[in-house]
Length: 303
Length: 332
Image (cartoon, rainbow over all chains, first blue to last red; front, side, top):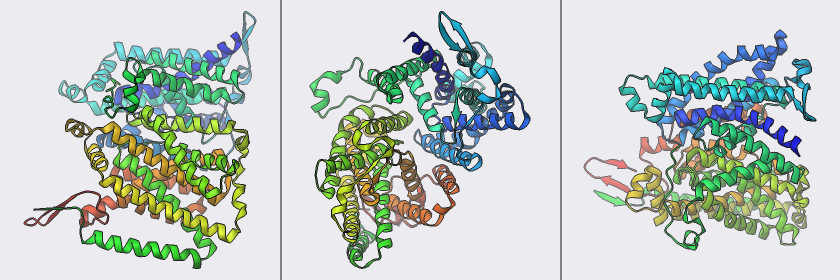
């Protein structure tokens, strides 16, 4: 029992890692990038390819991949998102979804149907464990959890205390006014997308180290990232961190209840949080809400 | 200045569509097996495109999870047929049941906006898929088939499925036409153009959206049930695949989002593309995704939107048309 809880928290570290990039982009650009999961798989494949071809450690390959992902993020913003977000809030959904289909199928075309993993390139690390109070805790999941804390902490510090962070916050709050005080909103959006994609590169590597992936593994990663973001409240990056952990715990509970309950457990906790967010302190439990014609106006969410 | 609903083209459309319908019905008795099967597929595509267009084009609701209703429609048909209900009755009942189920779902999901709604629907589709897998009748991912259809001879079955798909498509399109011309439909198009402005003049967006959501769920479920009748085997993974929504998005974006004729044009194009390029395997899917991205960025109103604004052509009068005699300009 305690063991599954600990394992769940460690898995939650991975979810937090993959979710923080999605949440970061959502906070700064008000865009949910539906190609997020596919891009994570793309980065996992690139890390795998470099590792396999040059016999580097996956961690070194990841350092090579980060600038590539940053460039991809910048291009994504400049070529697609900038144009799409001008056409209203629905267009980015459609374009990033279309992009995810392109990426998934290109990966399938190039790398085939075999599943890949980075675990075999890190030697003993993939199974080494610490023994703490009779529990075996894998070294690798601990590294991933710590990475999540460092990445989220880093992003948080960047946003709070650096001039760049101040510009990003200003752009997120009101791009036009930010422009008036001399902030190049286009540049800031490009940099933000680049930062988000670097976190995607890290989480793609983490995914490859933890287990296996294939060309179509992007969609579930997107759903995990989205669920963790919503559970965490989408407002703060630390919220997303706890969102990831809650998601993983719910999945473990689901798996304890029913052998096929792992994913369902996660979905149900997500829907519960959504339900609570929508209906708390509202007239949901009155008969009027269900029978009356006059429904309450849609809540304007802050985020 | 004159305001009217129909024009010379609409009259021609009504006559043309009626003739086409008669031709398609008589085709059931003369066309070859292969042609009938392909046309059945085309009719299902038209339904899917029109239903997704109802939601996104007129309702401003981009759902990535319409495979939920597609899969549930097929699943409910299997379940009802297992209770001993004749297969074609089961198809219709399944769609009605899913339509009914979509009402509480709409109550919940319509509180979400834009991308949150889109991915939220995707999560629900995943929930639906996982729950259906738990039903012992389905045998997990192995799936099952609609064996009750075997009471018909194979030729009779093919003709019956063809006619069922044809009638469903025509029924849903006529239903959509009147829905769009109704008060709710006008309200919906106002919301599509500017939700806040529509709200300020007293349009009740939530109620109208709810009806469009339910209508789209019903139609998509009917498409799923018909697809099951045609394919006869049910594997949850195939029916609850996000690929269905990807197809819907491609058809609507290319054809023309928010245009009644656009969805039909998109379905025809998709059908042609699939017939010619499906053999290229994955590249065909890459192409579909790329074309959808390009269309949404550079041709936001799709092919039909471009045709409409160039030629002022309106085949199906779902809005009002203002003709200024002095300027001779057409305004949609």
